[in-house]
Length: 275
Image (cartoon, rainbow, N blue to C red; front, side):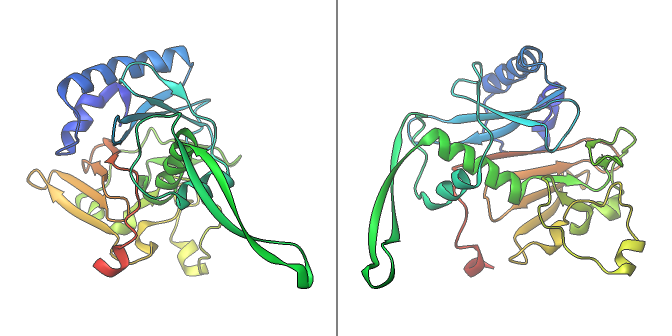
């Protein structure tokens, strides 16, 4: 949800879990964050609920690059922001292994026991290694996972230059009503490490400048997205059933769109048995 239109954008998402005081504080502090960190754009990413406290997450872009130029921040009071380090594969793997609710304290340490093999040949044996992981590292990995699997952008909202840079498409005027009712009109708002191979017929029907991301229609398990028309059909809302609390909203025939995550930061691993 863009900082400049935060109040209006949150109205599209019913039950966003923010009080009027928190929304007002975020609207002001995000504009100051954008100025102080010299960001091109700042937006409210969401809120991760903890046992003793909650994490308010914001993201910003540098140099106009929307995917690879993103920086992530967190706050405990909607006013003071701390910069998070970029996620690594090890941090993401450790975040996936931790179970249970967030505590709400960035300095809290989890004990993660990992089994591994030591020695070689006939002398090989299994040993358990206990690692201490701070909650701040878990927060970094969880945000990266949610971005990878549940962040959404409508088709045409982003454009890719011949140099490979991704920018906001300022000529985007929104999806039509019929297009907005199709899951194929929405893409993952994250870099694609291994893009799906497409046939020559599929490539002929697509525009490489806007069809460079993965469509939600190919997500596994099938049925992990809920698409609904709300507010009398004037707003299209997408909800992730894999990351409960991730909500995307788009007003057809307008460029207004955005997503917000309000949840406990745990993946719904029971989803395949619920569909």
